[in-house]
Length: 244
Length: 244
Image (tube, rainbow over all chains, first blue to last red; front, side, top):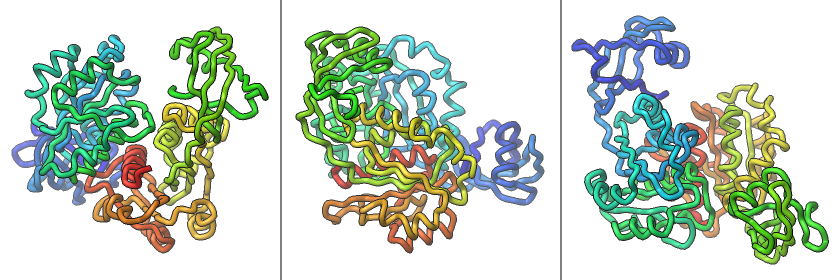
């Protein structure tokens, strides 16, 4: 953890906050905090700052915080992801927020199994701590917005314009298509909506629908990757290409 | 699985091979094989080809193979990786071979815990099936070579030149340094050796030693990523930059 993220409601008017549980243990044992020392802090969806350790034990750390640093910009990439199986999704949350995504739009598709939606992995109380964990790793404060959609067509035709303002829309499709960099090059201050399909890919109808809504097919070359590897790889390449 | 990889010893002079266990189940249930149908096959470290299903049951599939396709080139990226904890390493094997690495050089470092070396995850019989799994995903046949080194200094000063012929050496270091693409641009037909440190980074001595041996510091920008996420992200960006 390279930053301790704190919910606004947990900070008193004097800047005081109390950490307990795992976070208190981390601050004392890993960061080696002791009274008088500084730790990097951030307000969830707000500014970065510094916390001075007032008191600390392995169970309870009191900080006085000043949030006078900059507020990180929302990452310029949104992700449209065909819902992977729960075990994979569970591992992805922290990686996605660490890499930086403005919004995570999870969708059904023909090759997504229906029972993937019936999981605690999609409950806010499960994924939010994971997203926070990734942000603390990457020193960001902006929690990605998450929505879950069971009707692919309704999502793509009617809802997507309201969910992402990204004008550049890319869909990953193994083989053939352009590299993400080629498509992004020359677009000034691009904001990207990246679509990643299920294991086995989008079906022909889904791909046509995405293309009809402005998505350009891109690929990583001839190698077919597992969804989670492909998502991390593509997010890294897109971020690097847009200089975000 | 997008390719069935077969060990040369398992193919008879007439091109016959028998799949059992998980692979037979996969070919029958997922690929829906039946007598007369083709499946994509490859020889481990050899050529791609086609296998015709002769007989099949859920426990046993007989194929007659022709390996008359091209032999994939060895990936142009080698990886020098500070050994991550076993659980993370276990998940990385298949991702590394799917993304494409010629050689995986695992090393000690100050921030690598000693007990990470005492694990079945580093046994050839554990990691080889994982590497094969990643190759089958990516339709490659070239198994990365793997070596494990407990003495960082001896490795970097004395052994590295013999392990990797890559003339372009990059070391990932959060913050400040150039982007991988900037360093790679302009190098004709680059072969890259990429070094990725432990959680918490290389220490100052390690970084100096790497730089003295020709490694150029690069970074992914201001975000600090977990080792496994960083490794996948960097491999993707380097492959994209060298057009591999």
